[in-house]
Image (cartoon, rainbow, N blue to C red; front, side, top):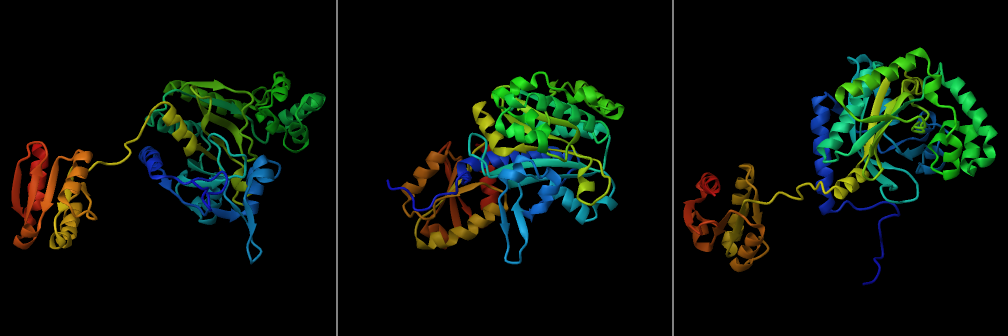
Amino acid sequence: MSKPKFQSPTGMHDILPQSQAYHDKIYNIVKNIVSFYDFEKIDTPILEDFNLFVRSIGESTDIVEKEMFTLKTKGKDHLALRPEGTAPIMRAYIENGFLSLPQPVRLWYFGPFFRYEKPQAGRFRQFHQFGIEIIGESDPIVDVQSILIMYKILQDLGLKDVIVKINSIGDDKCRPTYRKDLIKYLRSNKSSLCSDCEKRIKTNPLRVLDCKNEKCQQVLLEAPQSVDYLCEECKKHLKDTLEYLDELKIPYSLESKLVRGLDYYTRNVFEIESTISGVVLAGGGRYDNLAKVLGGGEISACGAAAGIERIINEMKQVKSRPILREVPDTFFTQIGPLAKKRSLPILEELRKAGLMIGESFGKNGLKDQLGKASRLGVKAVIILGQKEAINGTILIRSMKTSKQVEVRQEDIVKELKKILKEN
């Protein structure tokens, strides 16, 4: 077979019918859980102002420096395909006057995002995420709610073997001292770092803690830890968070190198990792400075997001399969031109009654149609022939007993429900 003339772009893929069931299951579970916690859905544009991400994520982050898809319009607007969800939602919060609403405002989203990076397992250039944001509350209980909601979603999807990894990176009071000591330590070990981390010492030293290079990992074994520098407020915030997690019996570990790598984070940051594959399935944290950076004043906030493709891979690994499609209880067959013509109004009546009906109206032979009905394993078959079409009747055959009854077409819903109940 020759190679197709056109293929999907590198790192982007079609979501085929057999994968849609996974997306539907994730969406439904997310919606049910976040609705219980009084979150409202928000959809932001796929394209945003380029500078929204420069200001919020940070100019020296990998996302801004290497991974954003950007474009300039004919009107000279500099736009970017959204690489993450928090900054656009905070922009929407400020722009739409959500500060005047009762606080906190709880929002959730589900959709596609874009990053230009090397495609690999669980990483794509177009990927999908769901996320939650709690804006307008400083109490650590909302940090814990963010973790709890993500943890419960993963549990309900069949991903039981997960652990929360958590750290505090401090705030504007205590982080500068930590940052200063970290830079000093990294400079003294500069020759042992990878080339990327050598640059990060000057631009974004906390990002060095994220580096997976083995050389850098060795250097970081004796690096200063952010929890040792926390001010009393940040220390209490972390302590309260851990006590809530203990109360909920959610497994966690304190990870001194966890920083999440985006400039807007303050205090608690966390990830939820599979203990089977080691893959990070969800992550988030507090971002109390983001609104101020975007011109919205002092507004405390916390949120989390999860990667849908990663979750689907994990679901497949643990064999947590969704129902791929609903199988109809009944199959509608028709014989002859007049019967085919009369079939569609009857089928629509059955749909309105909430019945799942299979059909193969493109086929004319009864044998072919009954063959498909048999493969589906339906409980009943409806047969509409020329005689029935003229007389205003219709046949219903039970697949269990092979018993066949003739009923008036206007009684089809009542009689079919009766037969299905018996079977």
